[in-house]
Image (cartoon, rainbow, N blue to C red; front, side, top):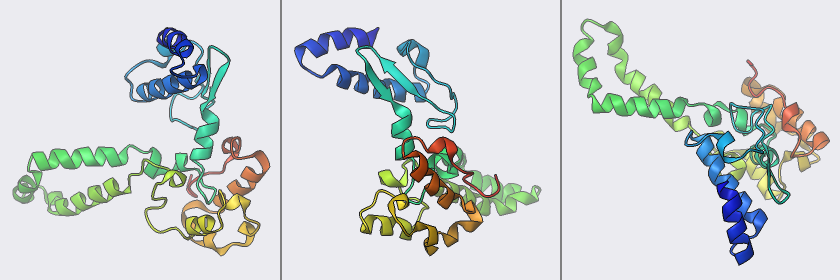
Length: 226
């Protein structure tokens, strides 16, 4: 009821357009729902979530309808924003969707607070595995650095290093490789094989067929071992 009351007050006074107000409330409440602060059902009786797991998940619809015929289609915005220049879907990337980086950071903090390195040094006399504690620490630190919370098209670091595909697309002033007539024979995708197989080019064909806002439900497997 909050958004109905505030919308009725703000809109007539000209503080914000009715549709703009609902967009704003949607963003705020969406963030709150995502962090578990409020229950989705309680803030919008019209919300229809068919995917309860990950935002922008493969089966997500996230089609929110508000009073005043103002429609917020989060699926469209999510799919476009999570589509990398190369055609991969950032929402499927372990660096983006996994909690591993955050958990590794928390564990490192706990180990440091407990001075576990000092403990491991002494305890390794009886627990041989603790002789490798420093290596374990380095692995955890590497996992933390792998964390990514921003898709490459929105300013993220992509594959955690310089990307010749990203540079090429930006130089040509294209939205993505799907707009390039040369992507089918482009050799910049050769390094993808070990991780992604031919998924990137398959996705590019799907984007051309279904459009940027509707292609993701037809996407291929992100990793070759899936």
